[in-house]
Length: 369
Ligand code: GDP
Image 1 (tube, helix red, strand yellow):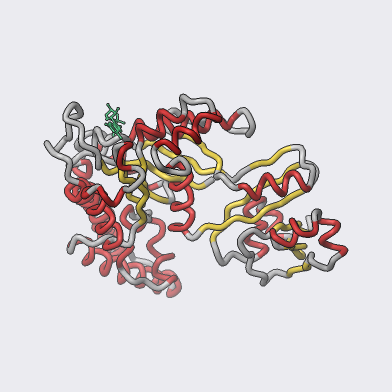
Image 2 (tube, rainbow, N blue to C red):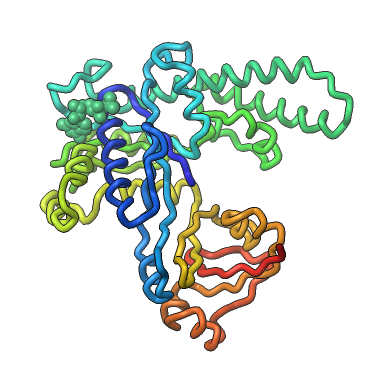
């Protein structure tokens, strides 16, 4: 599943948020086949009411939501790229995630020391960005050095290495300027050529503004949040306001008391749902469903994927042997009441290999084995 890495300076609320995520995952585990994989990895279901509607209509034995893995990446401090703290070990963990969630402290509390002496979101964001930039620069320098020495003869590889070199030089220039790799306009073949480096500043970032519970209802009233909002839009990054403390308290309440507690704080739902939705939107992800008596299941794909590619998310054999996909839009399925009824009403379409899957499609794949 999708991996999101939680980073941030010490004492900003990372562990509090991560533990809330894990507790939430455990609570769901009663209903869903989930487990905690490693101590620093927590899996949560992507909340989606459509899953349960479909599951009821199909009389499925179980409903399986899409999931996101949250990875707690502790140890980022100033100097990490030079080997301070957990240093490079920490950076290698970030290479494996699909998106980065940086927790930024926006709450005041004199009892909780801030590493730089005061709450200052801009400085916190700069410190982390700089470490990521240093690490990328280091990678690029090493790679360019290697490419310089490369003695390949065959013209295909030569062309590829040339485009990699030219892309890396442009990225290098941006990084030296303090800009992230994702700000550099690259053609698709150039992105492909440098993909193997897993550059950290190429990954999308969502800033998680950790506020006091009293600021949850109107986060803009907090000047720190305002500052993070401006920076996030400047850096073309996402933003979610959360109270790690509240998320943590929520996990200790029985589910019927949670809504009430949230209401008393002036919000409709927990911040975790928001965080997941923002991750989906920033990464350009969407959902399709398979639904039958055995199970109804939500699958995550990239927007724009074709039917065979979407089938490949279930199993690579589905993609290789793809024949066609019987497809019905979510609303049509619900209006008809079942797959069989949708077929009778002519709402079930037979789509071929060029079909671009739409958000909420319910699909049944036909394939050769
Ligand atoms: P980490 O070092 O980033 O993992 O930070 P922790 O999650 O360990 O939090 C550091 C301290 O800040 C702990 O004592 C938390 O209880 C406290 N803390 C975390 N979030 C909040 C918050 O939203 N408000 C307040 N007042 N304290 C918080």
